[in-house]
Image (cartoon, rainbow, N blue to C red):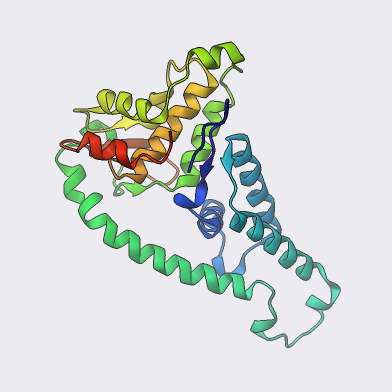
Length: 257
């Protein structure tokens, strides 16, 4: 949940994703073998993401910090001299074994859930009849789903370029996430898809950028907005799915004010 405390919003990341999702994202991003995870690299990049989330005012739940501690502990075990001495070391002695087991189990569960969810929401028929031909004319791959951490990374690159705002500017431009959701719905209504980056063009202040990003997260959570790419780590597109939606029901379900 996000709380408006003067000049910062807070979001509970676990409403959207958890620490295992972040690890799976890093494994996919680095194209490494999940059965042979390079712990040092994963820990380094995991901590980079935690720092990034902190800069975005995204509240880090205890499970994310616990995972960071677990990765550091595994790394320390792997660095012990005794770890490499045994020539006939059993598989269970690998300090990464339990983490790998959890990741594989979670990955299977996530893939099964995504497959079920994709049938009504992200099936071929959804895109085949309304998608502009030029958007994917040179790409033979099916559209792929965007994970939260790709979205955060893309947004953070834009946020870093935004000018710092003064207290006076922030107070003058105070816009709630609910209001921004309605503005985005008006802007996206009737459109088949829009580039994610395009939503932030012309946003003059850092707070306005953050409010827009949180509004997108809420719309994704409420399933009135879908995210897709023409290829993995390609351009991110927004696909509105709120035609005929009950606006009062949407407002009642907004968790970010």
